[in-house]
Amino acid sequence: MNRDVMMSDAAHFRIIYEINPYMDTGCQPDAALAAAEHKAIAAAHLAAGRTVRHMESAPECPDMVYTANGAFVCDGRAVLGDPPAMRQAEIPYFRSWLKENEFDVFDPPYDFSGQGDALACGRFLLAGYGRRTDRRMHGFLGDLYGHEVVPLRTVSEEWYDLDLAVAVIDEHTVAYHPEALDPASAGRLRGLGLELVEVCAEDARAFALNLISDGSTVTMTRGAPRLAAELRERGLAVEELDTTELRKGGGGVRCTALTLDNPAPDGATR
Ligand code: ARG
Figure 1: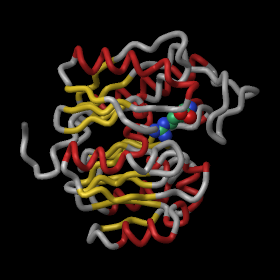
Figure 2 (figure 1 turned 90 degrees about the horizontal axis):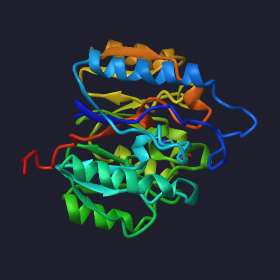
Figure 3 (figure 1 turned 120 degrees about the horizontal axis):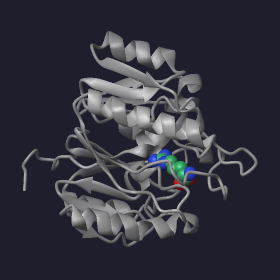
């Protein structure tokens, strides 16, 4: 998992609207720094032995650098995102790219934040709802892919996408910030029999959970030393990177890469 990802680029990244609490049109990213951050993330994926495929960003899409919201991809099949109005112009680009790269492409019947609200973890699909994803998407995703869908709702817009509050480390291990989930959701997560790593508010607020793990190397933001240390103690290699400019749009490491190789929940390949 996460050995094949799709990234775009930061060429047109800027803040011209505010659709999450981190965006402020009065606080623009430094273009050169943002490009350097993005390049360093891609380089870290390559250094970890991952394949990085590129989709060129479009000038009219200032958030296209966050490819995670364009779709959820698993077992050769992609369900497109249905994001807030300001980001709708991105979707035709994702559709074309995914088709050209030979994925079967499906339209979402309801609002859907793509991989931002859909984290595959073995036979489970940890699935956000109530913010950018309509809960009815869960049935659609479960029917299509066959996962056991675990509905998880975050408590505030601070965690507008699930991938800011929950991270899959490997198919048996999930890191999360307990206070970001409503009590019923936290209870569901605890009931799955997975190994859980609790992340403190300070690290979670630094977007520590917005990470990419392939089960041996974790690529994550700098500025969350407790989680980084905990993962190293568990035997993982951890690469920490600057994400100060990407944060201005409300995203981090995980948001910039769409995972292309989520396996079928039963491990079978199509
Ligand atoms: N500015 C983007 C938005 O609000 C950031 C998306 C971050 N993506 C994520 N998967 N959390 O849509």
